Amino acid sequence: MRKILAGAVGALLVALPGQAETVSDFTLDNGMQVVVIEDHRAPVVVHMVWYRVGSADEPAGHSGIAHFLEHLLFKGTDDMAPGEFSEVVEAQGGNDNAFTSWDYTAYHQRVAADRLGLMMQMEADRMRDLVLSEADVLTERNVILEERSQRTDSSPGALLGEQMQAAQYMNGRYGVPIIGWRHEMEVLSRQDALDFYAANYAPNNAILVVAGDVTPAEVLKLAETHYGPVAPSSDIVSRDRPAEPPQLAERRITLADARVSEPYMRRSYLAPERNPGDQRQAAALTYLAELLGGSGTTSVFARALQFDSNVAVYSAAFYDGTSVDPGTFGVLVMPQPGVTLADAEAAMDGVLAGFLEEGIDDADFARLKTQIAAAEIYARDDTEGLARQYGEALAVGLTLQDIADWPGILQSVTEDEVMAAAQQVLNRRNAVTGWLTTEEAQQ
Image 1 (cartoon, rainbow, N blue to C red):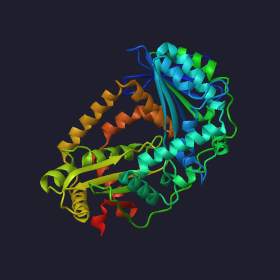
Image 2: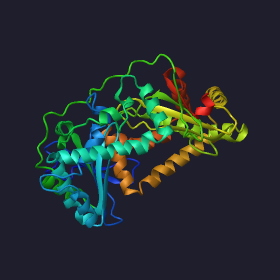
Image 3: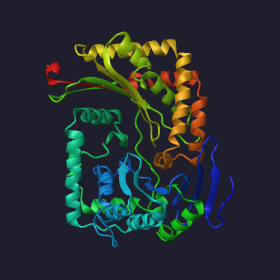
């Protein structure tokens, strides 16, 4: 590492071990972290601002306010009319959007590299100068309620997932849906939005990620010009979330719905997340998910449940450890017509028991290591994907060094570590099992 710009606070140019990209990192005087990922293959740039606040940071009784505010940030500021932000981006030939998770809220644009300053100017403007009318709030509240109707209430699978998540977290905030509970969304007010905005949207609670045809010096100059004058907030607090109590018994849910055409069962187990300086168990769980259900043809589930026994038409396992608090490890089986959910679950549990007893096939593990290494290399060709990778990791508390170390950790994980993680996580006492079925099947 070497300093590249004497005027930057903590400005570093990092050729990250095992990474093809060159990443620069510095911090503005107001506390805003700035990360630059150079990619000079095309004259375009991705500009992202990540706030370290998501739905899990919402005050109790105000579920959905983080996502609601994400929508409202497109309504206008003291300098921009409602909708003008996206209109300006589109007029430059670019595109923009935003998204909310449990742990962060992010706003992003992809434009020609010479329009980066304009993006910063507009994004800095809405960081602290949002203007909301009662009409804006009422209109957008109807929009998010309709979004919940379309994406959640009209989907039995989404409803099952929401109910399972709530059952998994009795006290932790991951049990509250990102979009919010409808009865709480219906009463979100203009003042609720402004209070959440004032408490969380500030440069010292934000990460700027710029990826593309830029230099660190250019980005620093523009960031200091546009974001530098934005005053930090003294109200930013640490994420002191409610802790989840120990789970003592499996929890089970059956959701019967006339709209279900393909019943399935799924199970989620509490699982550790990636932590700064401590990512090996998360890496092991990444392999476990791939081994059990990452492939529709070669995974343990696919071979045993779809081909050998013909119990299932589909099976999967999934895990993503990029979160602030412990997350989940999931498995799913969709049975063949005529196979009951009880039989499908019993078959899956038999496969899991056999896997825990017999261990990992050496050839499968070697193949997966090659595939994961290749996926990491291919991911570096996607500038926007890289920006998201860095922003997401930094937003949940990981460091640039953790991001740099991750590919090497994935390649150094052993079969013994994967099996140890499996023995710890695949514990029914830490699980929620859900059945999605038809109303007729439940009668």
